[in-house]
Amino acid sequence: MNTDELKYLLDLNGEERYDYFLSQVADTRDIWILINAENRFLKIVSEEDGVEYVPVWPAREFAADYAGGSGGLTPKSISLPDFFKKWVPGLSRDGLEVGVFPGADKTVWITGPEELNDDLKAELSNF
Image (cartoon, rainbow, N blue to C red; front, side):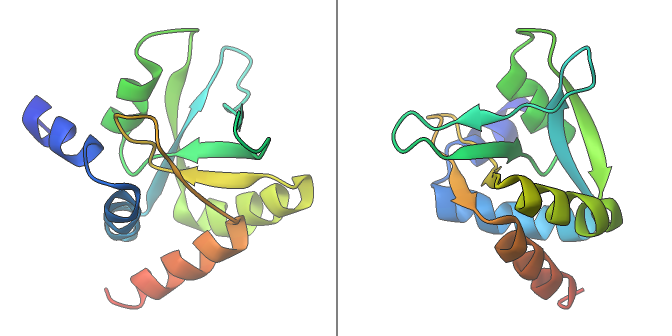
């Protein structure tokens, strides 16, 4: 993916990035997160409403761009079967939301893990 494509996609609005995320993840069967040196995933607390969420991306390049080389965060892929089997129940149990594909302006589509699960499975049925 070249720089122009990356910038174009990051500049989309939240709903357009969400739709792109669903399509890409259904195609590649991977979701990307950021982890630190202790293998702990990045978790963010929204300043506006205090919602805790895990940001996710449809490709390594987007996660790496978000990390920007700061704080020792590195992209890590999660297979879609692992996401469905382990992450959705774990995030639900821990009361964490999912921040889907943060944009260049740092806006993010926040959704529940079960809702993302359902949307991804619906998208997979189109393939």
